[in-house]
Length: 105
Image 1 (spheres, one colour):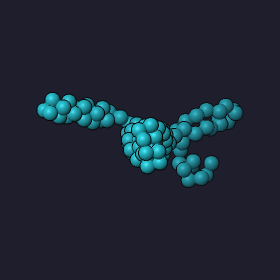
Image 2 (cartoon, helix red, strand yellow):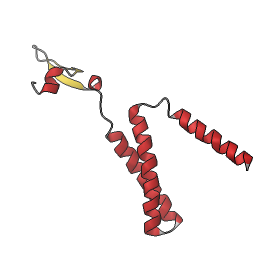
Image 3 (tube, rainbow, N blue to C red):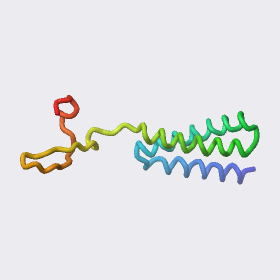
């Protein structure tokens, strides 16, 4: 019993330590996968009533939760790039300026 608790404590600590160095998008995808997997497992168990349905529901929910969590991550202004054209007709990309955010482009 003590060994099982020690192993569980080590696994939980390692899992939480791995989350420290993640970006915001990765954290949102991970959280979405965990919540989606739990919800999918509950729905799969309620619909099918057996282990196979629970596993399929958990996998589907985790995938959907990760996609939604990643897709809903807001972008920082500094990371957004706009396309500009110089006076010679050359097109280039650069960080968006206030004209873009104010609608004066």
